[in-house]
Image 1 (cartoon, rainbow, N blue to C red):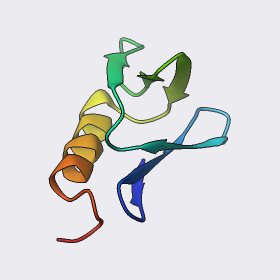
Image 2: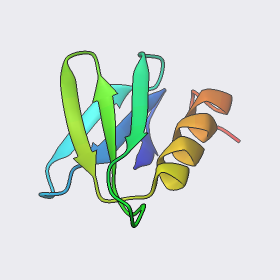
Image 3: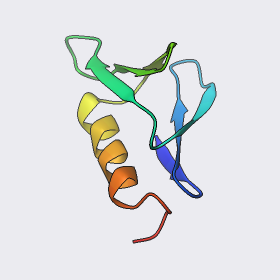
Length: 72
């Protein structure tokens, strides 16, 4: 996951597909596996399997929330 431009987040799923979602949208994050190396990000009706840990995804979302315009 990475912040893109003014308040957008790019999420890459487990098959390498990229998804661009507004940082301000309602997002749900859940652990998927016992090894804690993947999680599911739900944005609206779309479920995205992400090959990153829950902690990494939450950290990226919180960073985007703190700096929605891409500024630090």
